[in-house]
Image 1 (cartoon, rainbow, N blue to C red):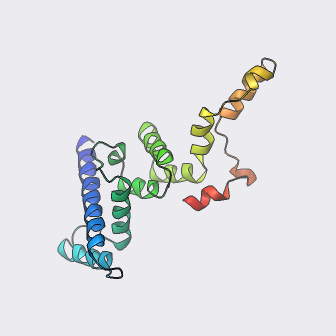
Image 2: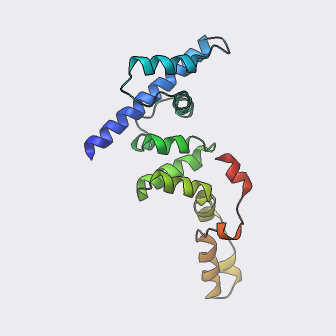
Image 3: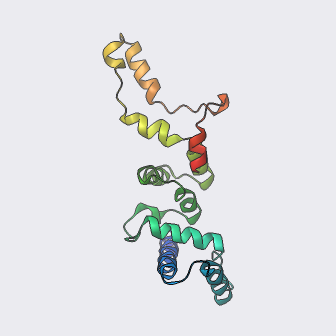
Length: 172
């Protein structure tokens, strides 16, 4: 398992470095030069036994490099598999993205679980609600005050009722 984690960190580090190279090359080349298309073909031809050099994957590598311009060696994200990272880099807000990274590491979420949690807006229901202050404890009589307070903090999922945030779905 430790060997697998070490290999994964190296793969993610390689992908970050490729992303950095793409960012650098794109500043030096003209728009419309099809840099990513050419690089994808070159990498596939140079390393035919290696997977992961599709145009889409190279674009994800570039995005990863943009999101972590100072490197990922000390970031928790380098402990996750690439499939998780491709989901996480779609989240625009850094704080939200980092929250999901730590939840994946803490709970051992698979890629499918992570995708479900993102789509269901777990961050908005759980992380943000923990920071919201309510006046339930002051204004409602006990024991209803504690019950109301706990109900607000509990991460209910109202998908079965069709009460989901369309803006959240567009972000993914």
